[in-house]
Length: 140
Image (tube, rainbow, N blue to C red):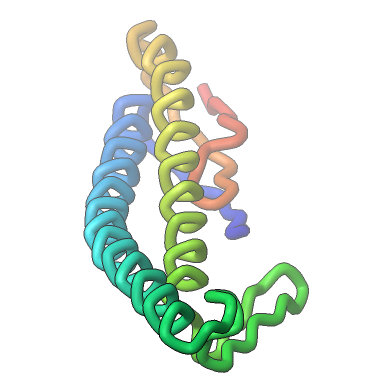
């Protein structure tokens, strides 16, 4: 989580910053969703191939696999030669995290729009956690 302090000359400038953050996240999410669709197709094809090999060899489908190593160290997943389904799961988790961040930014923007509508012209010091405002200090 990135923590920082950013100064804005007005509430409107802060809203523009939030809009730009949301635009960038939506762009990244779109790219990621395209990748997820490719991985989903690859995963389905892999499952069909495993089922075919299993039926030909008489082994259960879960025994027909390539070596895959997945470990978690300090909440970081390390996957060596991941299966398509493992790769898909990791990317879906990332997409969910990006979507949650967009939602947090939208909710923050709604709350701050009232501040901007009040017409207060003052410098703002904003405490950001992971580029999402957590606290706003108004200097009049």
